Amino acid sequence: MFIYQKKLQYPVKIANPNPALAKFIITQYGGPDGELGASLRYLSQRYSMPYPELKGLLTDIGTEELGHLEMVAAVVHQLTREMTPAEIKKAGFEAYFVDHTAGVFPQFASGTPWTAATMQVKGDVITDLSENMAAEQKARSTYDNILRLSDDPDVNNVMKFLREREVVHYQRFGEGLRIATEKLDSKNFYAVNPAFD
Image (spheres, one colour):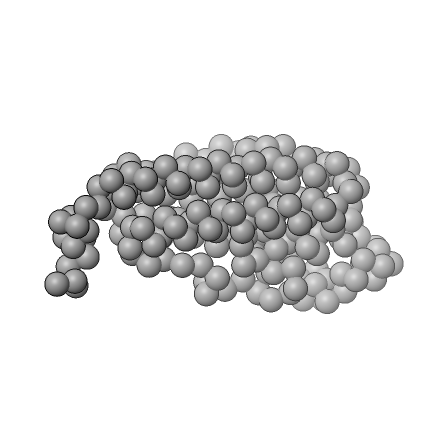
C-alpha cells in the first residue's frame, strides 16, 4: 500500500524556461537509465524476491523512484512552459513540440521513446540486485552529465538532489546484495532455483 503526499520530495521551482535544457533532462524521465525504468524494474522485481526485508527494500526504492519521476517531469514542464515559436526554434525543440507540444513524454534525450526493453527483471536474487546497483550508477552518471551541461542553478539543485539519491540507492542495494549472499548458501540457492540439479 502506498501513501501519496501531494508534494514533491524536493521542491522544483524553475525561474527561467529553457526548452534546450529540457531536451536532455527528459532522458531521466524516460531514457535508458531514467526514473520510469527504475521504478518499474524495482516494483516488478519485488514479486520474485524471496526475502521479506529485500522485498521491502525494492518496494521502498521503487516507490521513491516514482517520486523522482514526478520531480523530473516537473523540471521538464517548467522548462518548457509558455514557449514562443521563436524560442522553440532557437532551442531546436521543434521535433518534440510537433509530436508532444509541451506535454512530458517518456523518451531518451535522442528522441527514442521509452521502452520496457531498457529494464531487466530476471527473477534471480543476485542478478537482480547486481543489475540494480549498476542501474543506479548509470543514473548517477547521467545526472553528472546533465550537471556538466546545465548552468541553471534552479535545475542543478534538483539534479544534485536526485544524483545523491542514486548514490544512496546504490549503497542500499549493495547492503541487500550482502544480505542475499549470506542467505544464499548452496543448499537454499538451489531451493530458490529448483531447475538446477
